[in-house]
Amino acid sequence: MKIAILSRNKRLYSTRRLKEAGEQRGHEVDVIDTLHCYMDITSAKPMVRFKGEALPQYDAIIPRIGASISFYGTAVVRQFEMTGAFSVNESVAISRSRDKLRSMQLLSRKGIGLPRTGFAHSPDNIKDLIRNVGGAPLVIKLLEGTQGVGVVLAETGKAAQSVIEAFMGINTNILVQEFIKEAGGADIRCLVVGGKVVAAMKRQGQEGEFRSNLHRGGSAQITKISAQERATAVAAAKAMGLNVCGVDLLRSNRGPVVMEVNSSPGLEGIETATGKDIAGIIFQFIEKNMRPFNTRTKGKG
Ligand code: ADP
Ligand code: MG
Image (cartoon, rainbow, N blue to C red):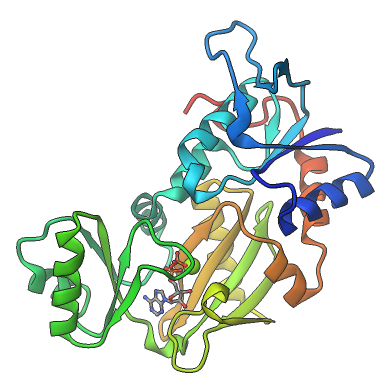
Protein backbone atom coordinates (compact mmCIF):
# COMPACT_ATOMS: atom_id res chain seq x y z
CA MET A 1 0.00 0.00 0.00
CA LYS A 2 0.93 3.63 -0.41
CA ILE A 3 0.83 5.31 2.96
CA ALA A 4 1.60 8.86 4.10
CA ILE A 5 2.60 9.85 7.61
CA LEU A 6 1.62 13.43 8.29
CA SER A 7 4.29 14.75 10.59
CA ARG A 8 6.18 17.98 10.98
CA ASN A 9 9.46 16.26 11.73
CA LYS A 10 10.73 13.04 10.18
CA ARG A 11 13.39 12.69 12.88
CA LEU A 12 10.90 12.24 15.72
CA TYR A 13 10.99 8.76 17.27
CA SER A 14 7.33 7.98 16.50
CA THR A 15 7.61 9.14 12.90
CA ARG A 16 10.82 7.18 12.32
CA ARG A 17 9.39 4.03 13.89
CA LEU A 18 6.19 4.21 11.85
CA LYS A 19 8.10 4.66 8.59
CA GLU A 20 10.42 1.79 9.44
CA ALA A 21 7.60 -0.56 10.52
CA GLY A 22 5.58 0.20 7.38
CA GLU A 23 8.52 -0.38 5.05
CA GLN A 24 9.37 -3.62 6.84
CA ARG A 25 5.87 -4.79 6.06
CA GLY A 26 6.36 -3.99 2.38
CA HIS A 27 4.50 -0.68 2.15
CA GLU A 28 5.62 2.48 0.45
CA VAL A 29 5.72 5.10 3.20
CA ASP A 30 6.20 8.86 2.71
CA VAL A 31 6.57 11.37 5.53
CA ILE A 32 4.84 14.63 4.64
CA ASP A 33 5.11 17.87 6.56
CA THR A 34 1.51 18.76 7.39
CA LEU A 35 2.01 22.51 7.39
CA HIS A 36 3.58 22.42 3.92
CA CYS A 37 0.54 20.76 2.36
CA TYR A 38 -1.80 23.06 0.45
CA MET A 39 -4.86 22.49 -1.63
CA ASP A 40 -7.51 23.80 -3.93
CA ILE A 41 -10.56 23.10 -1.81
CA THR A 42 -12.98 23.94 -4.61
CA SER A 43 -11.53 21.55 -7.17
CA ALA A 44 -13.97 18.90 -8.42
CA LYS A 45 -11.29 16.30 -7.85
CA PRO A 46 -10.04 16.73 -4.30
CA MET A 47 -6.29 16.51 -3.98
CA VAL A 48 -3.44 17.72 -1.83
CA ARG A 49 -0.41 19.58 -3.20
CA PHE A 50 3.09 19.64 -1.79
CA LYS A 51 6.22 21.43 -3.00
CA GLY A 52 4.72 22.39 -6.34
CA GLU A 53 3.23 19.02 -7.23
CA ALA A 54 0.01 17.13 -6.67
CA LEU A 55 0.59 14.32 -4.18
CA PRO A 56 -0.15 10.82 -5.46
CA GLN A 57 -3.25 8.95 -4.34
CA TYR A 58 -2.53 7.42 -0.94
CA ASP A 59 -4.36 4.35 0.32
CA ALA A 60 -4.02 5.46 3.91
CA ILE A 61 -2.63 8.26 6.02
CA ILE A 62 -1.32 8.28 9.58
CA PRO A 63 -1.94 11.74 11.02
CA ARG A 64 0.50 12.83 13.72
CA ILE A 65 -0.94 16.26 14.35
CA GLY A 66 0.69 18.25 17.14
CA ALA A 67 -1.56 20.22 19.48
CA SER A 68 -0.14 23.51 18.20
CA ILE A 69 -1.28 22.88 14.62
CA SER A 70 -4.67 21.24 15.29
CA PHE A 71 -6.68 23.67 13.19
CA TYR A 72 -4.67 23.50 9.96
CA GLY A 73 -3.69 19.89 10.57
CA THR A 74 -7.26 18.62 10.78
CA ALA A 75 -8.15 20.53 7.60
CA VAL A 76 -5.33 18.70 5.79
CA VAL A 77 -6.52 15.34 7.17
CA ARG A 78 -10.06 16.15 6.01
CA GLN A 79 -8.78 16.90 2.51
CA PHE A 80 -6.99 13.55 2.40
CA GLU A 81 -10.23 11.87 3.51
CA MET A 82 -11.97 13.54 0.57
CA THR A 83 -9.43 11.95 -1.80
CA GLY A 84 -10.59 8.58 -0.45
CA ALA A 85 -7.49 7.89 1.65
CA PHE A 86 -8.22 5.92 4.81
CA SER A 87 -7.14 7.98 7.80
CA VAL A 88 -6.08 6.06 10.89
CA ASN A 89 -7.83 8.74 12.94
CA GLU A 90 -10.53 10.83 11.34
CA SER A 91 -10.18 14.59 11.32
CA VAL A 92 -13.45 14.99 13.24
CA ALA A 93 -12.24 12.68 16.00
CA ILE A 94 -8.89 14.49 16.21
CA SER A 95 -10.70 17.84 16.56
CA ARG A 96 -12.88 16.42 19.31
CA SER A 97 -9.89 15.14 21.25
CA ARG A 98 -8.16 18.53 21.08
CA ASP A 99 -10.93 20.22 23.00
CA LYS A 100 -10.71 18.99 26.59
CA LEU A 101 -14.15 20.26 27.51
CA ARG A 102 -15.82 18.73 24.49
CA SER A 103 -14.01 15.45 25.17
CA MET A 104 -15.13 15.34 28.79
CA GLN A 105 -18.70 16.14 27.84
CA LEU A 106 -18.66 13.29 25.31
CA LEU A 107 -17.13 10.82 27.77
CA SER A 108 -19.54 11.86 30.49
CA ARG A 109 -22.49 11.33 28.17
CA LYS A 110 -21.33 7.74 27.63
CA GLY A 111 -21.19 7.16 31.38
CA ILE A 112 -17.40 6.77 31.43
CA GLY A 113 -15.74 7.37 34.83
CA LEU A 114 -14.24 10.85 35.13
CA PRO A 115 -12.81 12.89 37.98
CA ARG A 116 -15.47 15.30 39.18
CA THR A 117 -14.81 18.30 36.97
CA GLY A 118 -16.11 21.80 36.59
CA PHE A 119 -15.16 24.36 34.00
CA ALA A 120 -15.49 28.05 33.95
CA HIS A 121 -14.40 31.25 32.31
CA SER A 122 -15.61 34.05 34.55
CA PRO A 123 -17.43 32.53 37.50
CA ASP A 124 -19.10 35.14 39.71
CA ASN A 125 -19.10 32.74 42.61
CA ILE A 126 -15.75 30.99 42.86
CA LYS A 127 -16.62 29.43 46.22
CA ASP A 128 -19.56 27.68 44.62
CA LEU A 129 -17.41 26.45 41.71
CA ILE A 130 -15.01 24.94 44.27
CA ARG A 131 -17.79 23.46 46.41
CA ASN A 132 -19.39 21.97 43.33
CA VAL A 133 -16.44 19.65 42.66
CA GLY A 134 -16.16 18.62 46.29
CA GLY A 135 -13.89 21.36 47.72
CA ALA A 136 -10.12 21.42 48.28
CA PRO A 137 -7.69 19.84 47.67
CA LEU A 138 -8.31 20.18 43.96
CA VAL A 139 -6.53 20.41 40.68
CA ILE A 140 -6.85 23.49 38.48
CA LYS A 141 -5.87 23.22 34.83
CA LEU A 142 -5.33 25.61 32.00
CA LEU A 143 -7.13 24.19 28.99
CA GLU A 144 -4.24 24.86 26.65
CA GLY A 145 -1.57 23.21 28.82
CA THR A 146 0.39 20.10 27.86
CA GLN A 147 3.19 18.10 29.46
CA GLY A 148 2.00 19.03 32.94
CA VAL A 149 2.57 22.76 32.52
CA GLY A 150 -0.51 24.65 33.63
CA VAL A 151 -1.68 21.95 36.07
CA VAL A 152 -1.79 23.20 39.66
CA LEU A 153 -2.64 21.39 42.88
CA ALA A 154 -4.44 23.70 45.32
CA GLU A 155 -4.36 22.12 48.76
CA THR A 156 -6.74 24.53 50.48
CA GLY A 157 -9.89 26.40 49.53
CA LYS A 158 -8.01 29.70 49.88
CA ALA A 159 -5.21 28.55 47.57
CA ALA A 160 -7.80 27.32 45.06
CA GLN A 161 -9.61 30.64 45.15
CA SER A 162 -6.46 32.67 44.49
CA VAL A 163 -5.26 30.40 41.67
CA ILE A 164 -8.67 30.60 40.01
CA GLU A 165 -8.66 34.38 40.37
CA ALA A 166 -5.17 34.54 38.83
CA PHE A 167 -6.26 32.45 35.84
CA MET A 168 -9.40 34.54 35.45
CA GLY A 169 -7.15 37.60 35.40
CA ILE A 170 -5.44 36.34 32.24
CA ASN A 171 -8.80 35.72 30.57
CA THR A 172 -8.58 31.99 29.95
CA ASN A 173 -10.78 28.91 30.24
CA ILE A 174 -10.08 26.78 33.28
CA LEU A 175 -10.92 23.34 34.46
CA VAL A 176 -11.40 22.65 38.16
CA GLN A 177 -11.08 19.02 39.11
CA GLU A 178 -11.34 16.75 42.10
CA PHE A 179 -7.81 15.72 43.20
CA ILE A 180 -7.44 11.93 43.03
CA LYS A 181 -5.00 11.65 45.92
CA GLU A 182 -5.08 7.87 46.04
CA ALA A 183 -3.53 7.73 42.55
CA GLY A 184 -0.30 8.51 44.41
CA GLY A 185 1.24 10.67 41.68
CA ALA A 186 0.83 7.93 39.07
CA ASP A 187 -1.35 7.45 36.03
CA ILE A 188 -1.90 4.64 33.55
CA ARG A 189 -1.40 5.20 29.82
CA CYS A 190 -3.40 2.67 27.81
CA LEU A 191 -2.59 2.50 24.13
CA VAL A 192 -5.74 1.60 22.20
CA VAL A 193 -5.53 0.40 18.59
CA GLY A 194 -8.66 -0.69 16.73
CA GLY A 195 -10.77 -1.02 19.88
CA LYS A 196 -8.22 -3.03 21.88
CA VAL A 197 -5.71 -2.04 24.54
CA VAL A 198 -2.45 -3.24 22.97
CA ALA A 199 -0.09 -1.92 25.65
CA ALA A 200 -0.25 -0.19 29.01
CA MET A 201 2.29 1.56 31.17
CA LYS A 202 2.26 3.15 34.57
CA ARG A 203 3.86 6.56 34.83
CA GLN A 204 5.02 7.60 38.27
CA GLY A 205 5.89 11.20 39.13
CA GLN A 206 9.10 12.07 40.91
CA GLU A 207 9.09 11.90 44.70
CA GLY A 208 6.80 14.65 46.01
CA GLU A 209 5.35 15.44 42.56
CA PHE A 210 1.68 14.71 41.83
CA ARG A 211 2.18 15.04 38.07
CA SER A 212 3.39 11.89 36.38
CA ASN A 213 4.37 13.47 33.04
CA LEU A 214 7.63 12.06 31.70
CA HIS A 215 8.55 15.65 30.79
CA ARG A 216 8.29 16.50 34.49
CA GLY A 217 10.75 13.78 35.45
CA GLY A 218 8.26 10.92 35.79
CA SER A 219 9.28 7.34 34.96
CA ALA A 220 7.40 4.65 33.03
CA GLN A 221 6.99 0.96 33.65
CA ILE A 222 4.99 -1.81 32.08
CA THR A 223 1.88 -2.58 34.13
CA LYS A 224 -0.97 -5.07 34.24
CA ILE A 225 -4.35 -3.44 34.02
CA SER A 226 -7.66 -4.70 35.38
CA ALA A 227 -10.60 -5.76 33.21
CA GLN A 228 -12.41 -2.61 34.31
CA GLU A 229 -9.49 -0.40 33.32
CA ARG A 230 -9.30 -2.13 29.95
CA ALA A 231 -13.03 -1.68 29.37
CA THR A 232 -12.85 2.00 30.37
CA ALA A 233 -9.98 2.72 27.96
CA VAL A 234 -11.77 0.95 25.11
CA ALA A 235 -15.05 2.78 25.84
CA ALA A 236 -13.23 6.13 25.93
CA ALA A 237 -11.57 5.51 22.55
CA LYS A 238 -14.91 4.50 21.08
CA ALA A 239 -16.74 7.54 22.49
CA MET A 240 -14.11 9.77 20.90
CA GLY A 241 -14.20 7.86 17.60
CA LEU A 242 -10.41 7.33 17.69
CA ASN A 243 -8.89 4.15 16.21
CA VAL A 244 -5.45 4.87 17.64
CA CYS A 245 -5.10 6.80 20.88
CA GLY A 246 -3.56 7.00 24.31
CA VAL A 247 -6.10 6.94 27.13
CA ASP A 248 -4.77 8.25 30.45
CA LEU A 249 -6.45 6.84 33.54
CA LEU A 250 -6.14 7.57 37.24
CA ARG A 251 -6.71 4.75 39.73
CA SER A 252 -9.34 6.24 42.03
CA ASN A 253 -11.14 4.64 44.98
CA ARG A 254 -14.25 4.31 42.84
CA GLY A 255 -12.42 2.69 39.92
CA PRO A 256 -10.61 4.03 36.88
CA VAL A 257 -11.30 7.62 35.84
CA VAL A 258 -10.25 9.06 32.48
CA MET A 259 -8.05 12.14 32.57
CA GLU A 260 -7.43 12.66 28.89
CA VAL A 261 -7.44 10.97 25.49
CA ASN A 262 -4.54 11.72 23.16
CA SER A 263 -5.04 11.28 19.41
CA SER A 264 -1.31 11.34 18.53
CA PRO A 265 0.18 9.28 21.35
CA GLY A 266 3.96 9.17 21.46
CA LEU A 267 5.44 5.73 20.78
CA GLU A 268 8.83 6.08 22.43
CA GLY A 269 7.75 5.83 26.08
CA ILE A 270 5.32 2.97 25.57
CA GLU A 271 7.53 0.93 23.20
CA THR A 272 10.48 1.31 25.56
CA ALA A 273 8.47 0.47 28.69
CA THR A 274 6.65 -2.53 27.21
CA GLY A 275 9.06 -3.76 24.52
CA LYS A 276 6.12 -3.99 22.11
CA ASP A 277 6.15 -3.15 18.42
CA ILE A 278 3.31 -0.62 18.56
CA ALA A 279 4.21 0.87 15.15
CA GLY A 280 3.80 -2.61 13.62
CA ILE A 281 0.45 -3.08 15.38
CA ILE A 282 -0.77 0.22 13.89
CA PHE A 283 0.14 -1.07 10.40
CA GLN A 284 -1.70 -4.33 11.08
CA PHE A 285 -4.74 -2.22 11.87
CA ILE A 286 -4.36 -0.29 8.60
CA GLU A 287 -3.93 -3.50 6.57
CA LYS A 288 -7.15 -4.87 8.03
CA ASN A 289 -9.27 -1.74 7.74
CA MET A 290 -7.99 0.13 4.70
CA ARG A 291 -10.78 0.69 2.19
CA PRO A 292 -11.32 3.79 0.09
CA PHE A 293 -13.59 6.31 1.81
CA ASN A 294 -13.76 4.16 4.92
CA THR A 295 -14.54 6.99 7.32
CA ARG A 296 -17.63 7.62 9.37
CA THR A 297 -17.92 11.20 8.16
CA LYS A 298 -16.24 11.04 4.71
CA GLY A 299 -14.55 14.33 5.49
CA LYS A 300 -17.91 16.05 5.81
CA GLY A 301 -18.09 16.76 9.51
P1 ADP B 1 -1.30 17.60 30.64
O1 ADP B 1 -2.24 17.67 29.48
O2 ADP B 1 -0.50 18.84 30.82
O3 ADP B 1 -0.49 16.34 30.65
P2 ADP B 1 -2.93 16.35 32.65
O4 ADP B 1 -4.36 16.67 32.85
O5 ADP B 1 -2.59 15.09 31.99
O6 ADP B 1 -2.25 17.59 31.93
O7 ADP B 1 -2.23 16.40 34.10
C1 ADP B 1 -0.82 16.19 34.28
C2 ADP B 1 -0.58 15.16 35.39
O8 ADP B 1 -1.09 15.63 36.64
C3 ADP B 1 -1.30 13.84 35.15
O9 ADP B 1 -0.52 12.98 34.35
C4 ADP B 1 -1.52 13.31 36.56
O10 ADP B 1 -0.37 12.60 37.03
C5 ADP B 1 -1.69 14.58 37.38
N1 ADP B 1 -3.13 14.88 37.55
C6 ADP B 1 -3.91 15.57 36.68
N2 ADP B 1 -5.17 15.67 37.11
C7 ADP B 1 -5.21 15.04 38.30
C8 ADP B 1 -6.27 14.79 39.26
N3 ADP B 1 -7.50 15.25 39.06
N4 ADP B 1 -5.95 14.07 40.37
C9 ADP B 1 -4.68 13.62 40.56
N5 ADP B 1 -3.66 13.82 39.71
C10 ADP B 1 -3.91 14.52 38.59
MG1 MG C 1 -1.30 14.44 30.45
